[in-house]
Image (cartoon, rainbow, N blue to C red; front, side):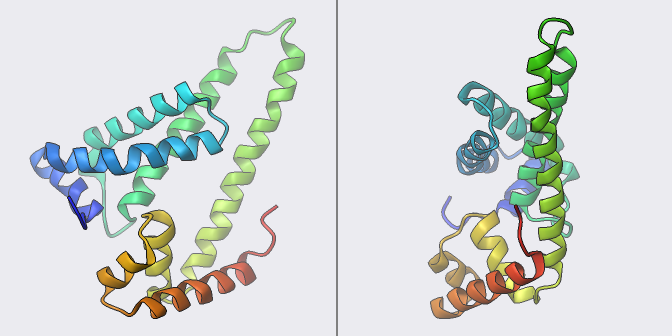
Length: 182
């Protein structure tokens, strides 16, 4: 399914339970979600499990997707992120109290990381809202939907150089608006 519109694929899953559309979504997003979860600190088995669970949620909740509120990639990665947070919270509740207490204290840094990630995400979202629409679109296609610059140029019907300059200008503006993310 070359040049698949992921939003349309989710809508097809919601309306017709379209298995081909879901397979295309799964094939595209499963490895990306797994990579995201691995970067977020999950081990290989947990990353696989949560990636599959996230995409199963896409199948079950496709009718809740609103393309006017978020891109397909944003919606899907939000599901994955929420599953990761839920799993972290569940794991935290399941830790036995007693001799393991020092380990629990060490794990508290994970909660700080989650809060920091959420705060950084909110800063980035606020900064993105301040960009012109044409810059938001190229950033979304490049970084959230993982399209190459050539694919973006073809999708938007603009020259490759324009795509590159819009991304460069947008990234400069985002750095200025967001500041230090550490």
